[in-house]
Each structure stands twice: as structure tokens, then as C-alpha cells.
Image (cartoon, rainbow, N blue to C red; front, side, top):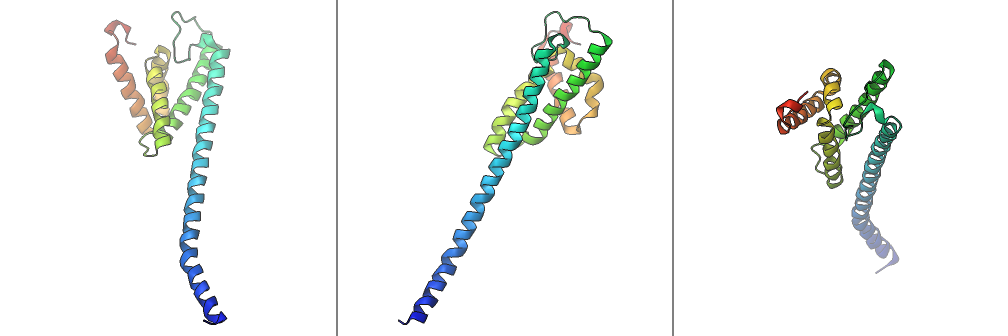
Length: 165
């Protein structure tokens, strides 16, 4: 076989193997980018929730942590405004988690949903959350609003009638 024939054979082998290899590299890079985006999304949402928890630590009297105070103090108008603003922050985080993780097929996202769903259930049983939701809950995405309303209804069914708000 001549050099030209060998070069032709090598060129054909390169074309035959090159395309599948390039496709595999492309697919690998896309998956890696998606995982990095998912981690970035998870990290950003987690950081926002940690900020919210720091606000709860700094303002325990506002009674917005997922475990309610047994004897909440009477709040001033300024404190009620702060409580309402913190409520909006919390619900915005929960809404974002709902929109990002609910009904996901990805294993990582499903795992995240389990944790966020538990937070939502905890807050749905919180008296301040339920009371504030009555007036503020209409401001959020429709499916999320329906979901939280259902969680609150479920929590109301679990509690004795005299505990309902």
C-alpha cells in the first residue's frame, strides 16, 4: 500500500472515530455544565435560606422560625412591619424552591424537594405563618399558592378544632 493510500485509510478512520468521540465529549461537557448550574442554584437558594435563619436568630421575638414560640410577645407596629417583611422573604424562598424542585425527575432535585417540602409543611403548621398567609398569600405564583393552601388545610385537619386560627 502506498503512502497516499495509508493516509486515505487514516483519514477515514479519523472521521469514523472522530465524530462519536466529539459527540461524547460534547455530551459530557453539557452534563458537567448542568451539574454546575444545579449546584449553583442549590447553593444560592441555600445561602438565602441561611440568611433568613440569621434574621430569625437576630429577631426571635418576631416568631418566624419554623418552631413557633409558646408565648409570643406583643409586637409594636414597627416589629409587625419587620415580621411581615421577613414573612415575604421566607415565602419568596419557599416559592423559588417550589418552582425549582417540585415535580422534578432529576435525582438531586427530587432530594432537594423532600427537604424544602418539609420546611413548607413545618411553616404551614406555624400560627404566625398561617395568619399572615391569609392576607399575603395571594401575591405569589398560582400553583405555589394552591400548594401552600393545601398544606395549611392538611395541618388544620391534624390539629384539634380549638387550635385552628
